[in-house]
Structure formats: structure tokens, C-alpha cells
Length: 132
Image 1 (cartoon, rainbow, N blue to C red):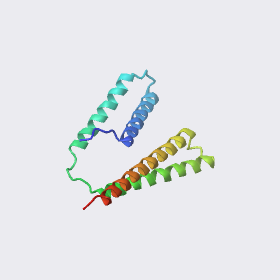
Image 2: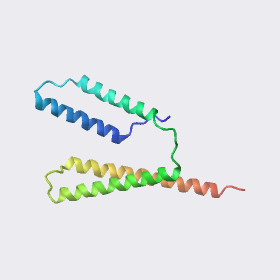
Image 3: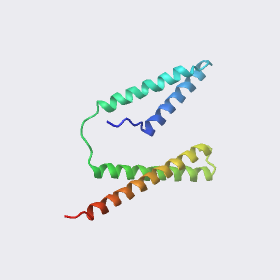
Image 4: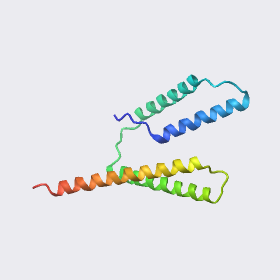
């Protein structure tokens, strides 16, 4: 089993902690205990891992996995482009760090997809050059 943390789940957990902290600060100003926040993140991560372990045992085929990866890269690029356009037009709901993170995320995902494609082409060439 691969022990890998999905970036989207980590981002979702960070947003949940941020929302909880905002709600706590709005209701009663208190000092935030970093250990409590860390424990909440760990607890959420454990529940995510338990959900992943209990998931169904069907393995998706390579074609659907690759298509999903390409669709994800495409979606990342569309989101980044949309955020950049909105920021350039002066939308007050979009700030620069959000745009930069989205652009970097789309860039990294595209580079990773390119590397996977290169490895697939290389593997295909190796298989085609094998003697029969």
C-alpha cells in the first residue's frame, strides 16, 4: 500500500482548521493552542487513512487512471488561468498568493504529467525494440 498524502486532502484539512479557528475567534477571543490544532490535523489524517483502507478493493484500469490524471491537470490549468484573469481584472475576491499557488500547482502537475508521458514513450520504445 502506498503511504502518500493527497495534496487536496491536506489543503482541505488546512481550510477546515482555518475555519474552526475563525469560528473560535469570532465567538470568544482565546489563545490558540498549537498542540490542539496539530492534534486535530492528525485526527483528520487518521480518519482519512481509515477511510482509504476500508475502501473498495477494485483497482481502476490504467486508461481511466491516466485519463483522470490528465483531466486533473487540465482542471488545474483552467482554475489557474481563471484566477489569473480575475486578478488581472481587479476582482477583490482573488488575492495574489492564491493566484501564485494555483499557477505553481498547475505548472508542477503539468511537468509531472510530461515526465510520465516521457517515461511511457520510453517504455513503449523499449518494448518495441525487444527481440521476439
